[in-house]
Image 1 (cartoon, rainbow, N blue to C red):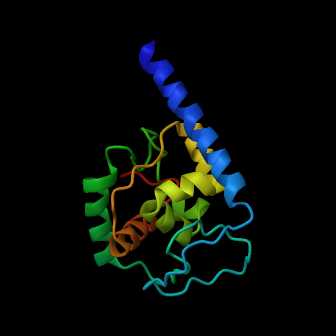
Image 2: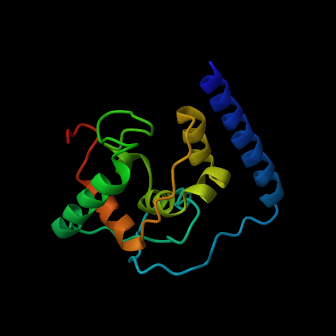
Length: 160
């Protein structure tokens, strides 16, 4: 009972904090302007949610199997405590995430979870649904790109 009450209070605080931060930042919503070493991603949609963080553009070509292997290792070491590919755990199942989110959004969520949860509507919605903010694992841009490549091999109907 005490644990449930504590969890509810933490969620209320986070939601309240995020709402206040959004009101403060409404007039000045500048994202960091750092350049990414990732190549440009082309999309015909100018309204694609790329999230908030250092990743502005990602170029997706053929799947790079070496990056997939690296991404799988990073996933097992850093992400698998909270995420599985085909089932919900602490966080959402990740099968098909590349069909639901832009590559930039995925990488920004991995690398910049605090600001994403505070300011990005889709990330806020995930927090409201899962009641646990994504932990910052200090994943590098190269590791995040490898994770993205690994996720590209996991469609919504795949099994790990």
